[in-house]
Length: 394
Image (cartoon, rainbow, N blue to C red; front, side, top):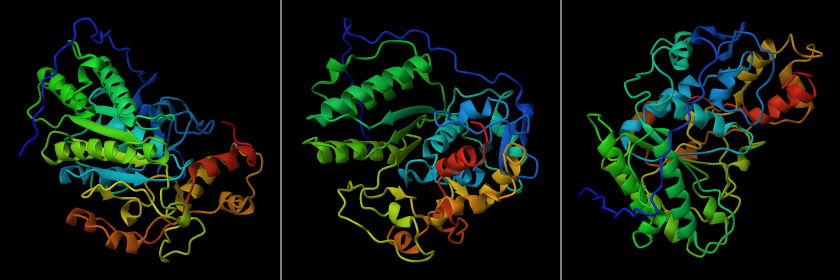
């Protein structure tokens, strides 16, 4: 049975007024200047030569629109994610702080976003031309979604429902401004007796009037630190969060959403940081009891072999980065991998067969190439060593 979307009365006095959305930052130069960096396979930069390292605050669009800033294009991970959208199941990915998870998600968002880039300035068209693999990613759904970004990193409070409603309402209003969707949106007070789910229903109703696409799954939701409230003192945290996420899950299952990505840097049971200094192939120990949400049907990709290198740097990436930055380093005689070992920067081994066997993954996941256990370094740690010990500017 399909979920119905209740009609919420509009409060004429308290409506959110939608000013014209600011123009999205565009590239300051032609995309043809995106080039693979010499002697590397997957590192790209505008101009094809590195001038400095990316800064902590820079995300995917900022990096690619700046001359000489490198980016490792994780096209295999992107293709693997794209292959799962048709499953209509929420996707979940965890990584520690410093691995570049937010940068990866911003890249995935830009691929999906209907507002990001036109046919003549799409960086992904240029990036895909330099791929070594022969099978191109099917792009029939690229740049065809309205992307709603939520972030559940709330401050301490007593009532999660109020915090959640306030945040979701503000982000929905922001989405409507950004995409220049005309009309008014109900005020937050209008949803007081309806619940936070009604805000999502109202957004979908607003988009339904505006969108002229021959399908109904044009909304894609990405939730940063989706389980963040569980770490706080909200009395209603488990019940409220579970109800909201399960509502989104049902919408996705019935084809009302294009996708739901849950991502987090939290480690509720210690199995993420247990991957550090771990022997490849060994079981991952749960270090402490978890207050994990009960969300059956979610595809947890955290320990799946096909996604173990989606974020962070593999040894191949580190070696490519070593060659790409050799002309900038104060002393390039010491290999970057040796420098990381000298600075005691250890890799993680995220892949775990035992964890995968516990999950009921669809056949499409089982058909993805199962890589051997790969050591993956924190991108933040690698860049920090390059900057502090190698003298490479940021």
